[in-house]
View 1: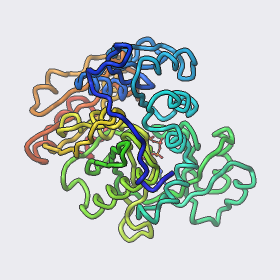
View 2 (view 1 turned 90 degrees about the horizontal axis):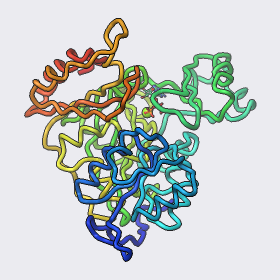
View 3 (view 1 turned 30 degrees about the vertical axis):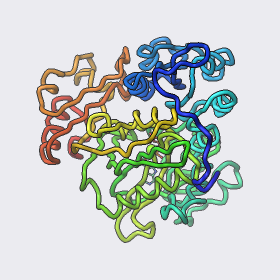
Length: 416
Ligand code: ATP
Ligand code: MG
């Protein structure tokens, strides 16, 4: 870790340039999901060639990229091919093996680096990092205890009001609320730990949340940082449903604190690339100072998809700029926006029959921007796309978002 002043020598990779072997500048991404696809779109718009490493033959990113290397993430031949094709490499998901990033980094610039991705992969290390920089960031995480051994489990008894009621979360591989169990008592905690396979976990105190928000930051090889204003996020059943992105989406003082905290967390990590930091807003008057840091994603984030349509520079543009050593422009939001996530549920009627959503009506509404990720099969809970609504003012954006959510039968309608 460093204090943010550390710099790595990085020669900019210009789009359209050729290396000594006559190969056009190519940017690589590990993972072929929707985040990889939107990265590929941004890179190609600038004129780069792209390569995606992804085992699935039908992936959203693989099918739009110049090159698709169809191997596992730890396949030596696949990694060698990726390094040979690409001048710089990034990742679209945090659970890529850290060893993979280390291997690639031996020959190519890799952003974000293996060490920071390893921190974001593990809630125990992530929370230790947040705690280590709390003095600088001004924001702590929820009170928590590491539960890796029976003795650590035993140490939490019913009188631990600092931890119970709480949420037991697996240290690794959790997403969209998976790998989490809510517990009120020590007995429930013991049962939950068994249910999670006695894996390494953190027990986190359940906090009285009033809101949730996230901040997207991009940091370059030279340590320079730009950021977006915080988005306010509404989750339904542990999955992001609605993002509110406009001035006044949360109290200004809190928004400023969250943004500053995210920037100092990125500096403290010596981060390069796009980082999303998620925060809880906690009931007024609580001992947590109103704001608590929850977790971070070492990549663009679902809550930042509105930047494609509402900002002059998107989170994916910044990912491209950061990894290629290009200047990082400070993004400017030109329209208030609401983003609605489109899960596979939208493709099923009340009787569970497949139906095509009424896109015609949705797209007839002003300021609607539909993004579908090219997934071949809709399944309940699967992220199929998103709809961003932009408009001249917040009131009209909300009106259109409510109509669109109503037409599509989306959850979270009352949260718009
Ligand atoms: P993601 O999809 O963001 O990766 P995740 O599975 O990693 O989700 P978290 O973000 O830790 O999980 O938690 C999911 C949701 O559960 C949060 O957005 C929040 O609504 C709720 N939650 C988590 N921790 C707490 C807490 N300590 N107190 C209250 N609510 C919480
Ligand atoms: Mg989360």
